[in-house]
Image (cartoon, rainbow, N blue to C red; front, side, top):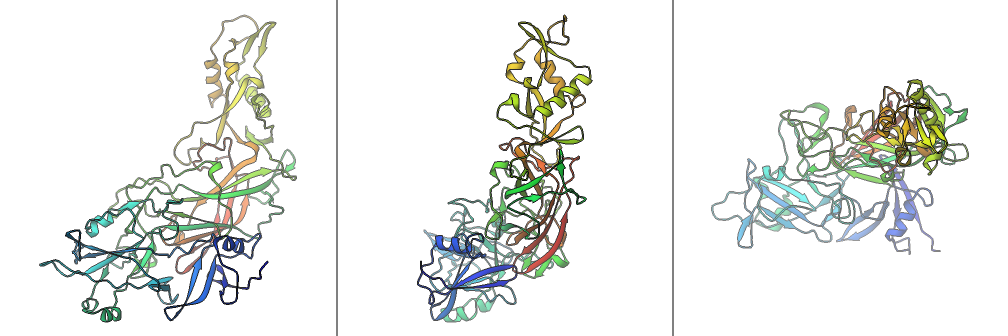
Length: 566
């Protein structure tokens, strides 16, 4: 096995490995990058800096993500749009017999370089020199905008207002998604301070007759990615041992059920209540003041697309599968201001949240099926055979049914038998497509298919036969039989809204939301069916919470401590 020489550096919440090709004979490929960056089996890092290398008589480095892909600043094409002073299209190029107000430019080797990381905190720089031609009688462009890695734009001229109307799912993942190498859509960074600067001013000095003069007098355009990035880590001081955390309640007391300590295993995290789409051009309210502005060209807040929704942006327990650690990230569309500048209500109703998936277990790691019914927690059986499943809960339900005067018997060859646990099946309450419904995580009982086919009576002897639907109606009546919470095979989840600057809930493009979970207490929200869509909720009778430290990173680090009370 070949020796690999690396250096490791830390800064602004990240750590990177330095791979110098002059000191290593090993070829750096995606598989090797993933192995080196993995924290459990490799060195562990947020990425690899490959270099220094000499290109075009300049010293440069290449940046690789921990999954082996190149950093999100990779650019394959830029489309420049040109406008007059009020955002109208100004033609600059003859294309297929007609003039258009855009110019497509493809970077070549040496056109992109690393940023200075000072002053404006620039991550990467891109140099472009283009030649524009206006039609006879047309005015000279006064403003310019850049779309990097343009997607979903047809080959027609567009005014600024038409560009502002463009929306897409910029967080789409997968092979053809917009969060892979060379596909991160970027647009002019929108600043403010009384005006909505979504384009960049072209000064007289920027319109040059020669290439050399143009290079000496460039237009400086600031751009930002159209998505936000989220990662979740577990604090080293949480107290996990062998991947198990001995749970405590909110008062710090050991959490026990039936006298047995309850442990938690975390199996992954995900995002929920995301937005279905984002704007190409960030929308802001130019009247926002104070901490919302970093510089005149950058805003820390945004307004959602009015056509964006949370629909189909919720997932099941089985869908939550992202591993913890700085190397594992998810991208998401903006979800910030829910109303328009003029107060119009958008379709988005909920803020984006992070959700943790776990299992409650015993000291030996075996799943711990827990039931809460009638204000008490107790252990129960869990079986794929319905007749043997959740017997203790079914006994509790039948006890309530009988106590309310509802006794039922079914006919047999030898007489009548009283309804028993084997006649019941546990049903999840019908899902409501909204959060905090206080219904989605509850269960109740109904007759099994076989039991519903029996002949039922309300007395041991005599009387008239009744329909099975009458019994099911009584079982479903919350005034007769209290609904229950069931952590089926210990399945549980914890969640909370993602916090932005100044303790606002929301996510904004080109920010990294680094969530560090520092404490978990309580049983979490129960899951009965892992395939049911989760609309996050916290049962009123449940006492559990997460405390987390969330670091929001953009081009600067914002450190804030949070106690997220469940």
